[in-house]
Image 1 (tube, rainbow, N blue to C red):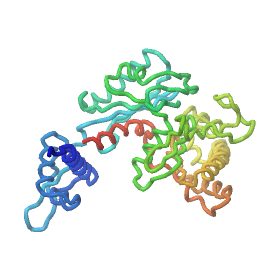
Image 2: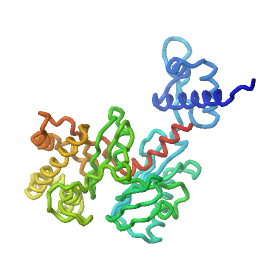
Image 3: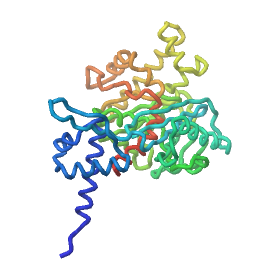
Image 4: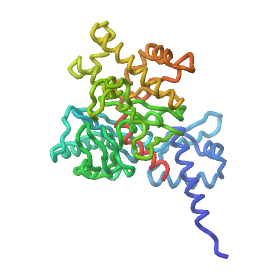
Length: 375
């Protein structure tokens, strides 16, 4: 009878993947500790360690243990073996960052550069990626791909923008953005990218609703550590939830959208577009900023309560404004609690943990996580 070799091959690949990812998760671990942790035989662990070392996927990292006997060698992953890049595209800025195999940001840069559907703009994106790689001495074969966070809705295959009124770029594709980028490119909705970064970097967070309080408002439904996109790839679009009937006019053509009351520009515009300056003035007791912030939190509390009533899960305040929210949680929780029908506190409301370029990070991380799964 012919043996089914595929079973043994699958088992071999599974063991290799478990060993690599355990080394990654533990940061540094010895061979004996891997044997104990994974309940695998010594020959299996030893063979896989040797193969991973030979391929450059892991490296020796000192010794571990101090029991009087011979100290065991420690192993860590080669964090720079592969790299991913992320871009965050807005109306007036571009952010580029590089992420290593530990999911850590190793390079970031934000420049003021107005968006346009021109060859010059596409060349600039390519130049920014090249400059980042040159500064960190990254070779082309190390680059897994480039994720691009955009203020628009993206098709299921991450190739095409099918709704893009903010930058008027409906129909633009990943290939167009990546015309001068010699690596695989994907498009991600910016709020989904921010939510993905948050749930990826917060191991205790499983289900949540992420509100991206950036220059435009977006949301991301996070279920079991994954982004739920909905039937039409439009899930979580709270920016166009009606907050005030017949209220302020929105770029979408409707009136009273959440977008028109809580986007980050409402705050930064009083400080020449500098959000950090707004919060500094707020701390100094500037009257105009304090009144604006009071109104901002009032409208935000309405939206937060609507989300809580609908999903009954944690609500994360992220995006550009979310990065500053930690010092103001008592205020927003008080307002959210007063609106809540069922609860006497608003502990479900939390500030984001990822405060550095969450949108660009969340667009780069999928490449890293896919690599982890395929090692």
